[in-house]
Length: 238
Image (tube, rainbow, N blue to C red; front, side, top):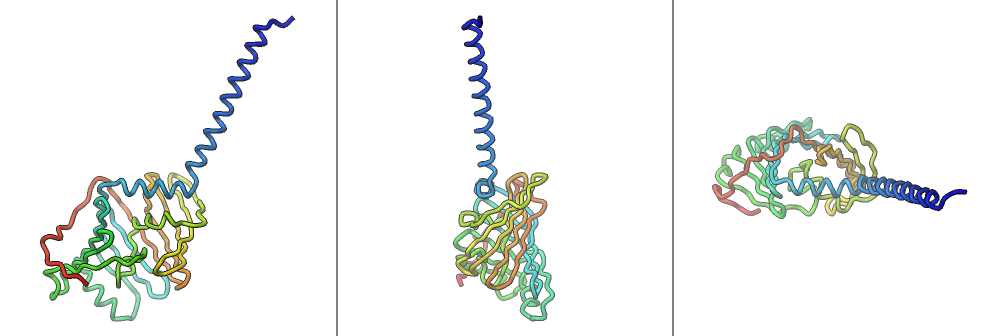
């Protein structure tokens, strides 16, 4: 005859096993939800926004038809982005790029969000003042400079559609999604996010214009950044 105490112990074991099994399933489902590509974009944006200071080297290049590559040093101080231009390489015949290359020698762009400032000391007539512009309502914020600092890709994350994770290995994740830009329209974006949840590379394909811009940052350092003192210059609005 089976004792009641034996049956009771058996039921307790079954209940414990079932509870642990259920918790494992719930934990696994929670982990899956936390690693969906849409959630990764949210966490990446939060991570970048939380960084007080960051310094890196970067480039932003257009690759179709006329190849144009802007290289710069980038400093992030809270929400401010500072680009110190290093070079402009291109294979276009247009004389515009020759003049632009000269204008960007030792030039600095200071992006404060709604406005940005451009300092171009190589142009004699403007070396003593800085020109202030209103940012375009677009990921292409800077008039006459079709560049997208890689870190600015986070501004598209909130309106990402058809988000897909296409690569996840060695800490790097590659995510693709659709985005409608108010200035250039339909855009397909691919972003590379590293193990620190920082976007280190982004590819923007503007389908309405058949143009691709690729941006990247390398050798970034968190906790370090060099500011630019606007108060030393006369500011002219355009």
